[in-house]
Image (cartoon, rainbow, N blue to C red):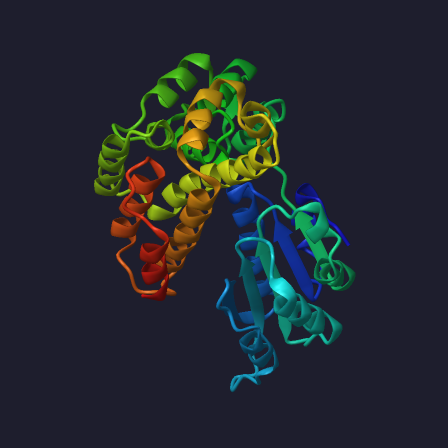
Length: 348
């Protein structure tokens, strides 16, 4: 079965299904859906959690062994598989189908993937998950939907903002949901009696940190490597967590990867970028980045971002900020990352 994201919260109050897949290219919404499922699973007795990351070297037999291993404490657990490119390959497809064909009642299967192409959506492994459990497809919030989404978020946070104030915030974040969420957190602290008008909203969103997320990402897309690296260091010194920064970088990389694939098939770059979700006023920035970064280079950067994500989660030992700096410099045009470097970083 398929469940729309807005229906998922109510679904989680019921007995959980044996398997779930969450897919989509909006990191914040996908992360929130996955977190909500993990919380509901813990409340229903799934106290353990085994996390796997599918890449070219992943041993799918390991997944089979863990799924069938007996716990010494007889605990129920979540088997979570992160498929970074949305393509598990033949071995992965077979392994997932086998898990779905013979579900273990003490396991809950969770698969997290980016937006799936049409062929993947019709694949046997995806259909197996949908037959046994549910598929939650997370779609980006469009420009027309954003004010309503912000209004709902503000209301859920106990903030009452008029329509003019909501529109100001929508224009400021330009479709970046993570940035919108950060501004809403600030408003929760600064709103007098929980009410926000246009004047208050303008003041709050203009009072950004010296090194803010918006300018940081724009400097990367612009190709200003030195300035982007300084902003990254400034954000680090101000105590900014690495997770939202990596989300922001990865979000733009995914857009560019998708657009580069369409350009390679003969589409015009502006059409490809718009089709990938770029707003009109941000086209020059993305156009510049797309011209600077080839398709293989962008995919290499995505691979490196995945390695940094593993470091943040403690799966591999590495200096997260040093690797983030290398990623930012390479994305912005300073050719310090090459496939051989990335291979070494992944293996560490």
